[in-house]
Length: 112
Length: 115
Image 1 (tube, rainbow over the protein chains, first blue to last red):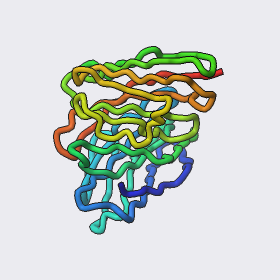
Image 2 (cartoon, chains in turn blue, green; image 1 turned 180 degrees about the horizontal axis):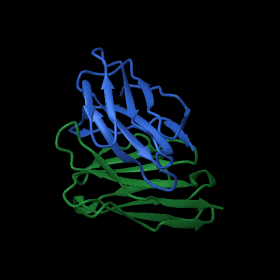
Image 3 (spheres, each protein chain N blue to C red; image 1 turned 120 degrees about the horizontal axis):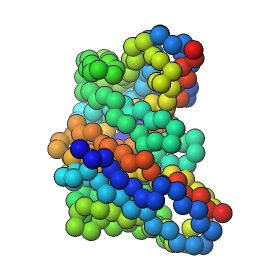
Image 4 (cartoon, rainbow over the protein chains, first blue to last red; image 1 turned 60 degrees about the horizontal axis):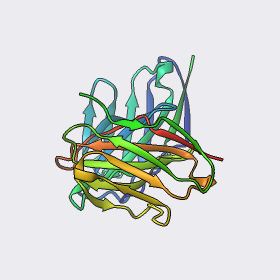
């Protein structure tokens, strides 16, 4: 499994755009990049997934350069409710099912 | 659709006692995961099932932890005997597993305190 590196913590003011970058130098050809969000006392929640270029949904955007060795999660105009831990996962299909390995995550604190 | 159900939500036991956690995944989801999350850390995969077969249990402390998924639906995770360092949140997740780009859904977890 490809190892991921992301910042331990980030602070942002309300209304700003937040970009969290994840490095995954050893990403394999069949690996997807997935981001999860976790609030205190809750299980992680899927945010977005991508393979290459750009993916956008109603919550976030995911930017993946051509070499796929890094990815950036972009949260537009964050609010206090976006304060959470964000995990970058890289993995593909192994032994017939999808592998889901979490790292340490990035703790995002949104300041009023 | 109903989410992943876990019980109990909280459990306090003394060290060397036994404990069991139960998980009911989303209907139709073939893959089921059990994670251990210690305070301040990311979730650590303990075991992964594909239907009722084990795909990965490389990080499961098999001398004290066991898990089963009978009939490929519900699952139980057991700890016997418990140690102080087992205090953590135990998370269950499930996914439909159709190809590589699949989303996993997590339950709220069981918070275990070993005293």
